[in-house]
Length: 473
Image 1: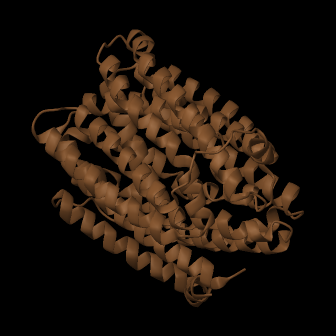
Image 2: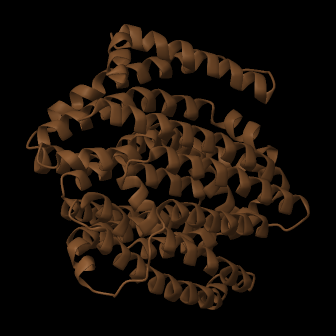
């Protein structure tokens, strides 16, 4: 494996992800004070359907184009031509979907929203092929440049519209502008011509891979969004706003840390699809790094949950605190699990990826339904944590036993020391007396304790030099 490829990829991925997270946090901090939890609830419900149609638009073609080394330029052009017709169909269907959604949620506001966002679906579907081509070229600089630029523009537009009273439309119109800009950028970088005779042969070349990838994405969508669907229907839009705020915030560590590594894995590791020893070694190293960071962050977010929520979003989001603290317990599990899909792809085992998605969906749906039945967003959060934990074990069984011909022992060796660091942090926060200061001062004190105990933990477990050596290598 080329260390330079991985370093370059992670460098630009880090620049893009970190900048985007900072932009998102800043924008959310402002919007959370201009919009209400009910406004965010409306956006959350719309987002459920947007994600589903984006999933349909992708069809698993993106990863399949990256993985398949036999595709010609002509093949890519044919696939792009197919995506244009498919994009048009999806956009029209989405626009009319607003009518049944408005009936289901008993709110006519969704009718005009779905018409507007039908255009967003169209441009996302057009984006799939050009973006995959750029990723296949390992042009991580281009991918992350547009991520930063469009994030800034979307944020500015959303804040301006929210300030002038556009409510949830502020976020919706901002998302549409971002979708259009993304497509224009990627298309200008590739200039794929759709003016070719259509044939099903290029589709057949990637279908075996893409259908399993699509099946996994389809199933994973429901397992990841079933909580929002039920909360929005059974509880209130305000309750959904509180829950989604805590859930999205719990994903930030994953975005910041694992999100830097994950986009780089498949484009590079696909070169080693027949070298399972190399891929397994890479997986264990990445697991070690993510666990060393994720376990302490989980502990910190649990004990500093109230300060984090109120400082970033303001006092009207107090009802998000407890669900965020509960979800924080699973942050490290999500960080490690988020990188696993790329390793299924790199070994051409999207069949196992699909199986993993099926069992994950069944468990998540059952857990979320039980959480909703128990009657609060906090019980939903608790059951989500249980589901994530069980899925983590099943997922790593498939990777370690079925793909790498190994076992849990190798994985557990990578987790022991990170768990010790986490235990040291738990003790430090438990002996900390209740702080009587402002939200900001309390957060700073807990942050300092987190940093100190983290470095003490690395030294105590003998991982300080090891962490530096692994990252450098």
